[in-house]
Image 1 (cartoon, helix red, strand yellow):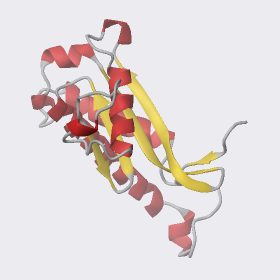
Image 2 (cartoon, one colour):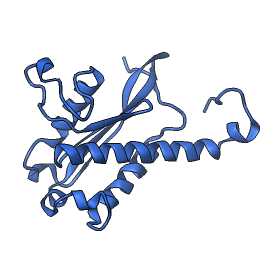
Image 3 (cartoon, helix red, strand yellow):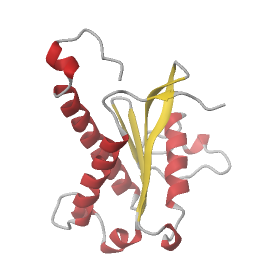
Image 4 (cartoon, one colour):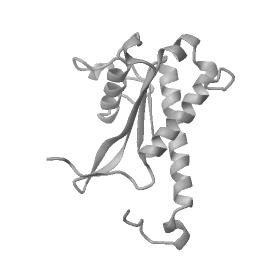
Length: 170
């Protein structure tokens, strides 16, 4: 039976795609501060991003993947970036990684020893394809952009304009 998943109203798949595209453009520009941290080899290789948020799952508060995306050709990746990013997410959600380190004493078989994600205001984003430090920076930049896009959506919403006491049903 399919689960009914409701994501926060002001976090959409379109916003996630826009946030990733924004950060991707920064990565591809070697003159940008984030782009200066990425090597040409890493730019050519590709990467995978996973974004997880709080969600109502069958009317109960839980967590779900809002969006994930690969850049580049996964067949030409030197490592399984998608699997690594998904595993980083699992470990972060379970409290066995904070995005800047891994609790090595809590690694189980098939866990990844790599870190490189970010958590901010309920968002958990992981990235794989760069150095661990750059995976963290990319994840943090995506979270920041996504929060800014959600803020813009709130500011333009009928709820904000009407001074509503509750968020409207879609």
